[in-house]
Image (cartoon, rainbow, N blue to C red; front, side):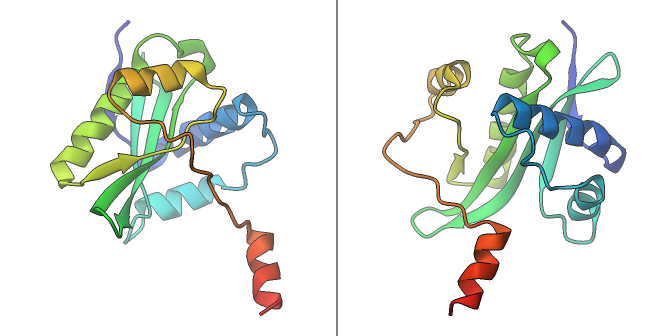
Length: 159
């Protein structure tokens, strides 16, 4: 299969949003996506972009994406966070995910980061196997902590 991986442009964001929604369904959270097309376009392509985005195209159609942003670790210094790597359901298993991950790692290396990190849901065995095969360490003894928008408001109200 022939595909191309490139840096995303603003006009790719409708396709990226569709992939994000596919991921939410895959992860059994179909109503969890709050980000809008306008958010993606403004946050990714304004004066100070909040994220970097790569897309994978097959026959001119976006079939995969990797969304990442810069972070800072008190232990490591500059790191890159891979927020999501999503492949359309129809294209899973075609090597696009591996190719996108390769490009993310190359990008992180070009930045000189000391770590690239991301999360993977514990039942996504194919992804876990890929990551471990590529040399990543899946930390099974850490818990991810989220404070939702409502949680933030409640927290502030209780100060």
